[in-house]
Image 1 (cartoon, rainbow, N blue to C red):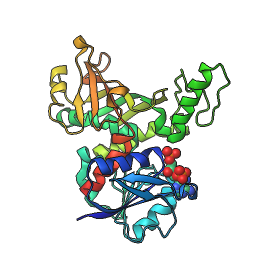
Image 2: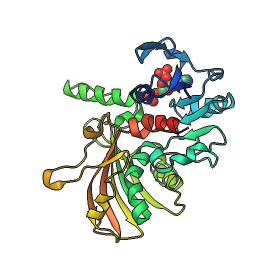
Image 3: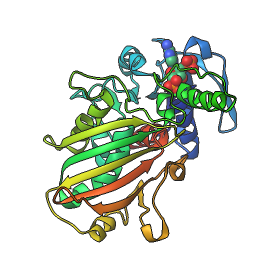
Image 4: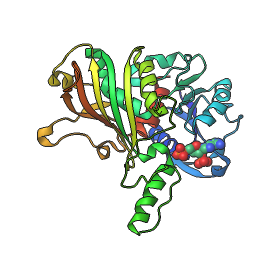
Length: 331
Ligand code: A2P
């Protein structure tokens, strides 16, 4: 049955993509409510040919909402998510606020979509963007060969930091071209023509929170309690789409051809892997696309039963907005 849907954080990078996904996928909704801060109240956006005016988010915003898609940061989710659920809405939350809560399913529809049907708190969590994209490549291999460990490095686009990340890269490129001083607001270091091995806050063990998401969320989504993960997350001067270089270690051995065959008919991820024709995925290839792409599949030369691979996906879409809308489609 058709639903009244709300987007919390509708003016943000992910919120805007949620709007686009709902329209593109012809989501069965009766009404769409757009919510953001008081700063944005009154802004107008087109949806299915009609203008919708953004309203200020308050605790009373959710009275007749069936599904609330949250993407306004963890603080807003913690403060307003429970009141939305208490008002009867199913919350699909893009922040990290509830992801590791045992009573909150953490869902990638192609992997564990069934688990979305049981959400005791009325809250379902959307996983971290790099985790989603990495697992899209690892899940078909895991089903065949049993995943044991992951060693990964990410190459994360600035749109992962929201609209402000995009502005910062654009302004720095522009300033450098004019030989003017650059401004740094979002990142502590220059991001234009640089890479920064630091995404999210550092923790006590010298890994960043973002790096530990791959470990903790990966275990929860795949249901592998003893999965081992080492990850280095890097911000790169790319506007959109995250890339991840992965060594994946399995229980069973396989050939490269067998591994490639695992992607013959997988929803949401396609093989793009032919070095002879210089065919491998780059972030521009997945930008604004629904599907993730996997290539550069090789036998790892250090570890037994292991593959090296490269996976790329639009982190605003599959890493966030599209994944959330797919969860809404399930429920
Ligand atoms: P606003 O545009 O009114 O600030 P991004 O991650 O791209 O920066 O987007 C963040 C989103 O979260 C925006 O839609 C932003 O709205 C929204 N947001 C930020 N703070 C609040 C708040 N206090 N109440 C409601 N929405 C908020």
